[in-house]
Structures are given as structure tokens and as C-alpha cells.
Length: 580
View 1 (cartoon, rainbow, N blue to C red):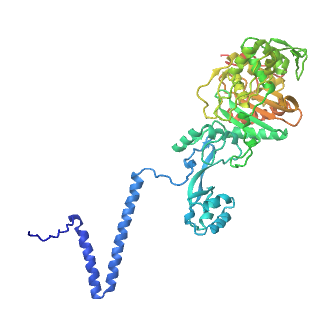
View 2 (tube, rainbow, N blue to C red; view 1 turned 45 degrees about the vertical axis):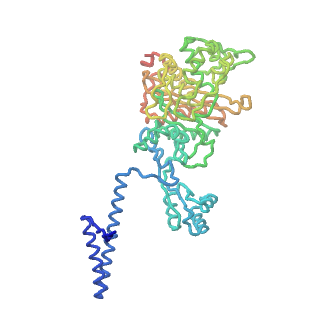
View 3 (cartoon, rainbow, N blue to C red; view 1 turned 30 degrees about the horizontal axis):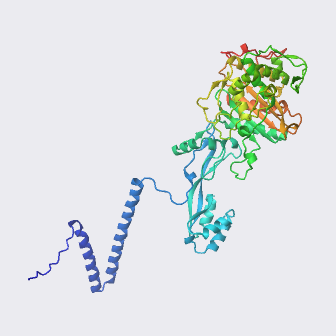
């Protein structure tokens, strides 16, 4: 058997790479020639040349990879324990574009314990650079098994101090932190976010998804409030609260036609940048606190009686003696001890008169009107804090009497404001809103336009010659109704624990579609006497109206219903177009 010798397979080099083979052979021969000739310098030059070629090739490859990643691989993944809040929330602004809340980039401090050379040294140096750093957290991470965040929210200055330590295993990750540049101003309106960026309260929670969406679009999110009016309200509410040494206070300004909340304040105040603020200060009393508001409710009772046809301004009610319902006697605080017209019942705030009217209407009528005015359900505002009222179970005659002058039903200030707005804007219940432009839908007829015009007439009369005189503002045609109530303490109504409020409206003249503004202020447990709404709340309402009218575009005018010799009260027909 013959054997053929094995033939070595020739090595084939692709034509396109022949120049590479020749280059390598040339370099090898250069090294050999340099060594044989004893010219070491040529050997060195060749080697340097080769090194340059290698590094140049690596640089080109890395650059090409970076360009490819940037252009063709989409968004890079996020590693580590990043903050969800890094998805930017939009700036919050008022209706005129003034800044309320924004994001500032802070940094989270991370430590990989495997890369820390001296853990005790690192611990002491980090504590010196960051005094607020948690000892237990730092200890746990330093002696842990994996990379973890030690502290969030580092300012640029704090980051620089840690970076200057040059410690191994230290790294930073950017995170957005919500800041409120105006401090306590509008804090209960704006609300708070948690450290992860989710809205917790106020507008931050109410519009959480919308704020995030606007942030992705790079646009601000506008609220309904006007910072100028907000500043006036806060200033006057704080002054009145301090003057009367109150437990708490509420102030609200709304556009009755659109339902937009132009200003809202709750006292005591808090700074949303201070996470240590007490829960009592954080509480939004306008939306979440319940009160029996007293005679402010007489506006609602009288409106129901007028609208249902049970009375007109000339209808009389006997208030000569206390009204007895079962074993209970109802008396007037400002007793006139005489027969009064409905107009006089309203101006003199007669409990007897409104009780007689409520009992005559009966539970079905009262319930229907209170429902239409939004007094039996939580206010349909965007705020998650908006609380449902505490309503009576049985609508007996004695309950109806109590309801007629503001007892027996615990409502929130926002409910009282929304109901008042329905009485003065032509008779339509309009949902309140913190969104610029108001809510779409939800409107309903509460009372007729004629009834609304009559209530405006009565409210103006109450300021001209009734208990609301201290709320008047020159040339602004202010109307309103006072409210005073004793608070229920340990099952009994206390003469010491009381509240005073005033629901004001301006201007009271003009057509039904004339922009009207409701200004409401409540003082909870004023210490100074007298504690009635006409003394503790009405003056503050008057000052808010006087100072904010120009911002709202309400012009001052001579009151056409005042004369040199008397005070002619406006009639419904005087309110041009209001009944149409």
C-alpha cells in the first residue's frame, strides 16, 4: 500500500489584508536589522511608532462604539437605587405664571463597602463632612455586602465636601428634590410630595399625574390661585388670628362664576420645605375641618324659602316670644321681640324667624335645597383632603330649626363657600376648582336667577344696616352674612369655645353674569370678646376685599343705592339683568 506524503496546506491570506501582513513583516525585519546593526535608537523609534498605531486604533474603536450607543441604542438604563422623583415634576405656577414649586437637582450618596479601604476612617470622615448623616444607616451600609444609598438630598456644597475626602467606594447619583421658594405662602394649596416624588397633599396630590405629564413636556402646570390675592388673604388672616388669639382660622376667595379658588389660607401656617412641621399646622382646615357655622346658614334657609314660594321679602314672622318646639325654646341673640318681615329676619339674624320658615317648609324641601347647594356631600373640588359633612340622621322639626341657623350639620368651609357662590352667581352651583379655568361640568341649578338677585339684595342690606357693617369697603358694594356659633364640647355647647365667620360677596350689583367674588373668613375659638362673626371675621373680609379688588379688576364706583338722606336698599329689579 503506497502512502502519499502529506501535503502542507498553504495559508491563504485574503487580498484585502495583505497590506497588514506586509506591514507586520516589515516591522519584524526592522527590529532585526536594528539589532544586527547595533542601532538601538531605531529599534526604539519603531516600537514607539507601533504603540501609537495600537492606541490610535483603540481610540477609533471606542469612539465608534460611543457614537453607536448614543445614536442607535435609545435611552440608557438606570442602574442602582435611583429616585423615582428624578422623573421631573413640572413647575407649579399661579394663574399669572408666578413660581410656586420647582425641582432642584440634589444628589444621593452611595457606598460600595467592597471598595472601602478603611471603614472606620471612612465613617469618621463622612460624619465630619455630613453631621446630619444617620449613624445607624452609615454603619449598616459600610459593613453590608452590597452597594446602597446612605443619604439622599445632598446639596452641591455637601457633595463637594464628601468628594474632597477622596474616599474609595463613594459615588453619587442625581435626584430631583421638590422645593417651595415662597415658604409658607400658599402651602395648604400647593401641598407636599414624598421623597420619591409622589404628591402627598394639596395640588401636588390632586394633580399628580397632570404635573408629571407637564414635566415630561417641559411645561409648567398652572393653578387657579392668584398670588397677589393669596398674599393679601394670608396677611389679613394672620393679623386677625393673632389679634383674636384664635385656635385656628380659615380664609378663602373664589370666583363665584367659574368656581376657581383664587386664594386659600389655613392658620396656623407651615413651611413645606420643613418636614418637621406638626400635623396640626399641615391640616388644611378649609377642606378637612368640620364646623357648625351658625347664622351663615340663614342665607341658605332664606333662599330655599324664597325659591320654593314659602315666603317673599314682605312675609312676616312672629319673633315676639321664644319659639317652643317640644321641650325646646329657641331664642334670638339680638332679640327684637316683635313681628318681623323676612328682610328684617335676615338683617337682624333672627333664629326664631328662620326656624319658623324651616318648619313650614318641612324636611323634604329643606333636604332638596341643601342637597342642591352641596351641603350634604363632600365638596367636589380636586383636593383629596375634601371631607364629607356630618349630617343629621332624622330631619325632625327641632332638627330643621337647628339647621335653619347653622347647627345640627357640620360642614367644611369649602362647602359654605360653594353654597354661597351658588346663591350669588345667578343661582347655579359651580364646583370649586384649583385648576386654572375651573372644572368642566358638574354645574346644576340650585335656585332661580330671581332668588339669587334677592339674596344679593339682602346681603347688601345686611352690610349697609345689619350685622355685617364692618365688612364694607368704599365703592365696592359689599354684601354678606355673619355667622356665630358655640362649639360642642363633651356633648354640650360651650359659651367659651365659639367661632365667628363672615361670608362676603362683591360686587352685589350688575347683571347675572357680572363676575362676583366670595370672600369667606372663619375664626375658630377667638379669645377676645365679642366673639361674633361681625366683630372677629367681618373686618378682615372687608380689608381683603378692599386690598384685592384692583387685582380682580373690580372698579370702585359710587354706590347708587346710598343717598344723602338715607340708605335705600336695592330691589331685585335694580340688579340690572340679574333676574334674566
